[in-house]
Length: 122
Image 1 (cartoon, rainbow, N blue to C red):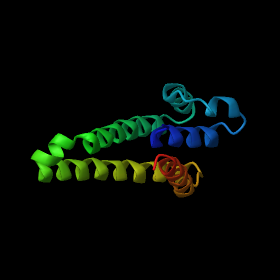
Image 2: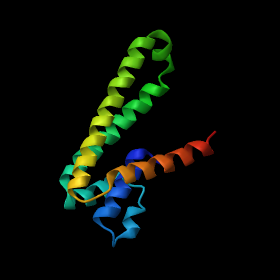
Image 3: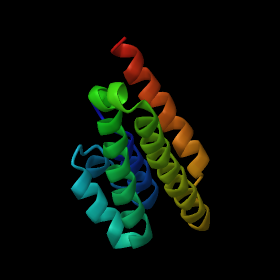
């Protein structure tokens, strides 16, 4: 399943390299990140952080033992990571705005794509 961070990297890559459609179809996050870093290193750090936090959130959601034994701690930790993700999202929107990208539209399209993928697994 494609992660939000991969979809986000593709969308940003498409904005930075509109002429290079082939590489933006890559499922290799590292390749996309490398290409993005050549044009805008600020995006690279934030995308790496976004991916890391996204993976942490996924881990916490799957940790049923922690949820059962320590529900308050589980919820606190999950909220903490989700807040970090929101902060990074705001920074990405700010940098995108500086670069004349419509980042809110990019996030909306990613939400639509991930919702379609989620619906397939229901």
